[in-house]
Amino acid sequence: MKVLFDLQHPAHLHFFRHVIYRLRNDGHEVLITARDKDILVPLAKSYGIDIQLFGVARKGVVNLTLELIRREWELLKIIRRFKPDVMMAVAGTYISLLGKISRIPTYIFYDTEHATLSNLIAYPFSTCIYVPVCYRKPIRWNHYRYNGYHELAYLHPDYFTRDSSILEEVGVKEDEIFTIIRLVGWGAVHDIGKSGLTTANKIRAVEVLSKFGRVFISSEGELPEELEKYRLKIDVTRIHHLMAYAALIFGESATMASEGAVLGVPSIYIDPVGRGYTDEQEREYGIVFNFTHLQQDDAINKAGEILSGYPGDLKKWRETGERIIKEKIDVAGLIYDVAVTLPYRKKKHVKKHSK
Image (cartoon, rainbow, N blue to C red; front, side, top):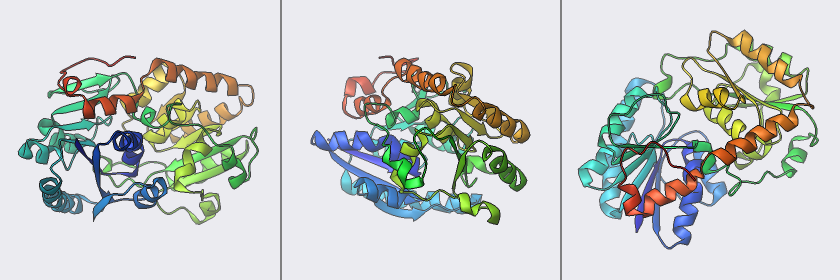
């Protein structure tokens, strides 16, 4: 069969990567389309995955609208040539309507409740929408709630084993305490009108966290001059290996906070609205700590409190990550089943998928 994956963000390549490998190994024909955003191109090259690239991610409502129109037109031409049996995407902003028009089953995976505009564009036209059970909003259209997190599509131990050689690359020892700070660009549609850490608090966070050990900053944009020396410079495919050895993940990325959680690393997540999955990871597992943009001082103080518990708390955090793995499903397995198993794809309104 033929399967088309449309990627809007580098994280979507992580999400589908192992399913793409498996489909190809099983003899299925796969086509990946994408827009040029952030590190997607070097990431795909590092993983040896060919993508059909068109369109460049731009900021602002007008630019995003123009990009939507251009990509819809280009994608329609590709769909007519490739003639996929199934189409898949995270969010599905660009392919859902085209799937409806072309009468091709289109399956959307998403976990961001407050992406109101893109969800309204995608959800009504999708064949089925797949969301975690912790997704906070009701969905009016055909959907399926599964017991997992996006990050388990690539960080489940069936697919990921941390590589200690990353420590030598960045110059830290295996038992050394260090923090990764993640700063986002705030350029997505659902980020319009929102903001994260102030410049002053970025600097203060580094000052506080540096008292406990090394600090590495992963940033989508420019940094204050005094923080540039902390910028993380490693191969884009190696970040999760470094995260797996970190004492703390701190910053503005829900994805990285959740990645930390499934790796057994405590995370501080700062965002005006939060996410259902980070809420659950705080409520049920106590490994993610959510703060709004108005609670930045509290977030920094909590980060210092967590780091002060090392090395004694290391075992507790790692065991929490193991508990998450035990209680949640292999999400890549779910995606594969949706792609190739017609009876499975026809199920409707199932509350959760269990092991």
